[in-house]
Image 1 (cartoon, rainbow, N blue to C red):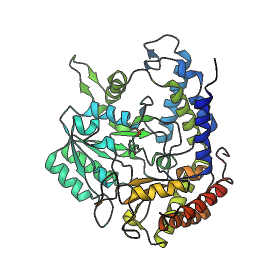
Image 2: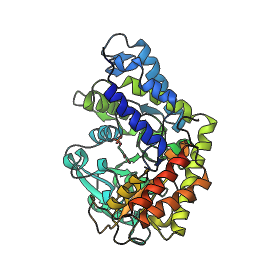
Image 3: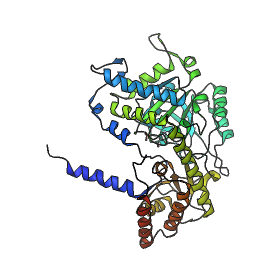
Image 4: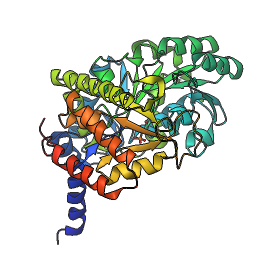
Length: 426
Ligand SMILES: Cc1ncc(COP(=O)(O)O)c(C=O)c1O
């Protein structure tokens, strides 16, 4: 058959875009060649509905080995008692938890989307907001940090069945113990979605939410640096108390309920090529170099945040404890929207995303903020010394957002710099 040159030329163009630019999208990373090899392997050919040792298809004996490896390694990384590695993405992992813990119309409480929360934590256009009654807690207007008092107030007043911690644009460590206490007070299940900081947690640089939450979900493709996908985890203590009696009178443990929610509840056949790629990423996360990598991610973020502050930018909450920061552009450029800023930076081959800031005066399509993250650039080998240069280039672009000649000269500098940071050096 004739090779699909058109599609491969598109892939090559994307490869060029990724290699020549500065990637600052906080939820992205660059996976290793081995992760890509597994993701592009013959495992894509296999149907394997079910779980290792109990499948609905024949010929799963080899696939079982790969999925079991992914399970064992993920348990080891986070000291989990049980995990499910099949969710196709983070949203599916969250959906499986919601299906397990809530009935349609039930109340749950998550971080306000406009304050850093995720779509799947209660957006009115997402299943989480459509099927369930989503309540929100905020960050403080001055502090930019989660307002635990307000969280408690809403929880005590509304008695949600589930409380969700975790965010897409929140740069601070969480007080999981405090939320657990609130959840216990009202008999709610406490779930942490650690999608963003999972890699830092894996390296022991942030608190492990499995010690506090009943259920933890994550993506595998952000700081964790694996293929696109989701996972669900349970800690040691939280299996038995949450068993439910099914209509048939069987007692089902939380792990069995979650397994059933993923398959057959919301998914069909698992993506075994991606599960194998997850297993490789988990192997990488267990190597000593991984701690050095995540330490550098965190250091780079702290240095970048400080460099932005030094240039007169406002960082929501004043800084970062993790891999990302949210910049409120209104302090330095009151008339520049997040959308315009994102577009100008993309022209300079600096990729980032516009983002609502807490108490934003603009719509989600315009926004007043930009979100920056360091996982991807750190995988390319960037150290603290490059962060100041990147901020300088960002500032030049944002100060000259309408000047194509200046933006073009920044793009040339970006491309020259990135030649020294190969994509597959590690
Ligand atoms: C906190 C959080 N949870 C879940 C998700 C969803 O992940 P996915 O895009 O894989 O569905 C994201 C993605 O950005 C996220 O930030």
